[in-house]
Image 1 (cartoon, helix red, strand yellow):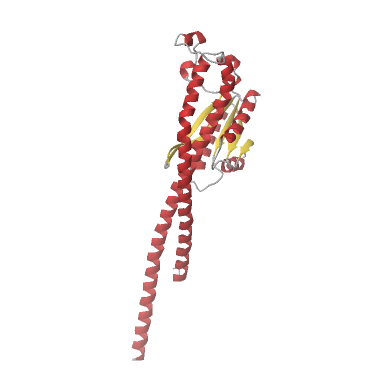
Image 2 (cartoon, rainbow, N blue to C red):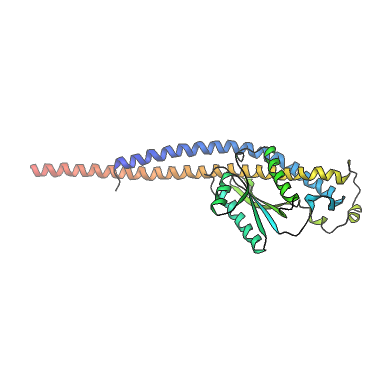
Length: 293
């Protein structure tokens, strides 16, 4: 049985840990509020961008747009979005687990894989599993800006335009609430079109309504498609950031609660040990008095 001094030392250590987890919970909560405001402000713009692409692509010559080109998939690029830091519950591990499931599905179809990762945790875990990374981005997962999304999107466009990859999927955590995040697997290249556009000709779509574009729809798409990809990547970054802060806040709150439970348990154990020591001393005194008498 541990001595009173050992129990007191453990209680002091756990209290110090609880101070750290409480502080991390408060910091993550403040960061989460800012990240949540950013993603909620971006979602309407990203949705409107997708609608604009739907209208514009449906009334243009899709064959002239490289980012919309559909071809036989031989090489799939998987972009894994995690954080630079841990202590966020299952935030990183859930994305990695889903990414490896996607990889097994692609390999079962006979396709080669190209790995790209955002965040130190994802990059380190993939390398540990023997996966070769084409590119790794770090240092901004805590508070990404649009320039970070541009950098990622430009790399993906270069790989796709050069036919080094035939399909690009993005695996990331989608933010629902501070205690709920869902892993999404989204195909970003070729840029997806709504299902109602598939198989329809330009003449068919013309009968649905007349829209005027300035400049021409084809020229507009040439500028719009890269911007749409950047917007989608930026949205995924913000969703992932908000999810990370929410997961870390929840994990630190649980850690603080567990620390409080441990302190209560050790305090009870310390009181019992102290009471036993007092009882033992009383017995020794009584026994000594009896011996003298």
